[in-house]
Image 1 (tube, rainbow, N blue to C red):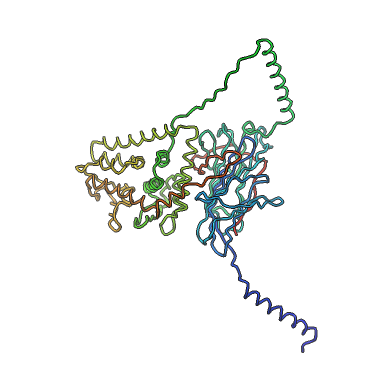
Image 2 (tube, rainbow, N blue to C red):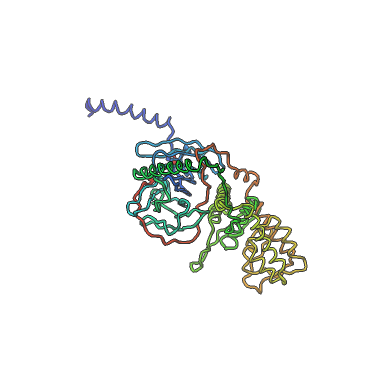
Length: 534
């Protein structure tokens, strides 16, 4: 039996449910947006006035839903200034300051259309004032803590997290300290600046990474106190008095024009066989091909196909076999390797840009012309060792020892054929991975590498040279779909005028040299802000 009250409730609920079902059928239901963060690379420059410059390099991939292409990135504190926000091709991106209350950050609008499972790389350059403060636990020091923006709602960890802090000029490794529990992974020098570095793989996207430094206060001017004002005033009065005395006694002094002198440091001699070709102005695809040959030498990858595009296979190592040391550009190159063996061209372009920017940073204070001439002489000496070798065995040994520098010669193909005349017979060695596992033969015709010297078959010098030259050409031609389009990615768009010069962009390079520094518990301003994608 239905009472009047119950009948009234049903009469109200049934129409409401009907309206709800109609609205559900009319209004589309949007799936939740999910995303992953492949890399978060951060460079921080500590300025003499206590401010910092920040350069974020973030790669984010939307995995599901209908994303708007808006990414929130946290900033350390208020008063920050954004110098530019760009994609990997150098195109300027729109951004909005979304700071509110105690939260500081910006919303970056990615270039549309947004495609699921396609990486989006963008770069933010910002200046933040007042980040350095007195280190209360280390008298005579100042310090800074910096926590890169987190992504609490990302799926999975941040695959590659790098933080590099460039200290003011003059700081030495014995003067810098790290926060408790966060020792530096590496300490090295770029130009005249000390650099400290951290790197983590599979870092939890929600977890703060507490990087920081403490250094002597003489390198940073946090502003004079009252005693400094008194001292400055006294110095000015004394200086004026001395000038008046000199003027009265000796009359008007002659004016000497100021002279400015710049000391050139000559050639930068610490570049690798891949960095040097950047100074020698080799084409970007050729430089990337040299990175590939370096990975072949280290038995990290093998070439499995060359037509129409090159394909690579990442090689596994046994548990007792030590992993080779990889340069920063080799790590970045491997990051561009897709699961099916192809290369992701946007990541490949970023690899070259990071390499080029690092070389530019290393050349600060040095003569670029002298550096280029120096490495031309290095390449020339490598060729001399090959051409002057008296026997085929010695020639083969000289080639194997110098192959990376030989590739740095723009006229490599012709010189290689001249260095190996037809009458010379070469016996390729089983451990020449750059030869056996490179793209030197047509598909399906690559020989099986010998397992012992007795299985190696001799080959005429000209055929050997032709195989190497063809391999280099195939690797370069098959690296990207369209060389011109790829080159266009490397030309940055002009950036609007800034209030102060933006620092050179290095690459979070890892120097593989651990530093035993004293521990510091830095009490100072820190950066701690969340980000996310939608």
